[in-house]
Length: 118
Image (spheres, rainbow, N blue to C red):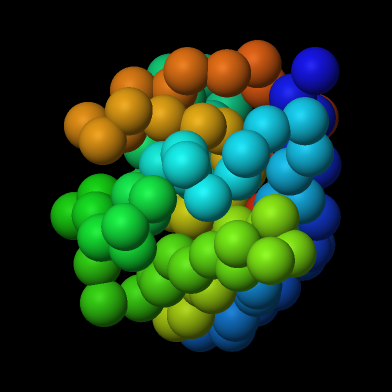
């Protein structure tokens, strides 16, 4: 059974940074594209960043140049480094396995709350 556990969220001022982690188990991690998604209150969940099994990265336009996705196939962990945070980045952040186009393919974990104050 695949399990994804997100951590690293918190409250930060605008312009600050956070690093999110997602620990995976129950799958051959290196074979999967992994994505970070977020859902703000009253909005649909959206793809933030994706890293393929081969290490190719894609980002939503709203976070390009500010966020960096990376993975550690030994630790079965995917990271999201978030810099220059804005209030509009406030959301619950989730990780998931995904297709190369970013369509989520697994079950959702509990997510981690990111709140950016102005």
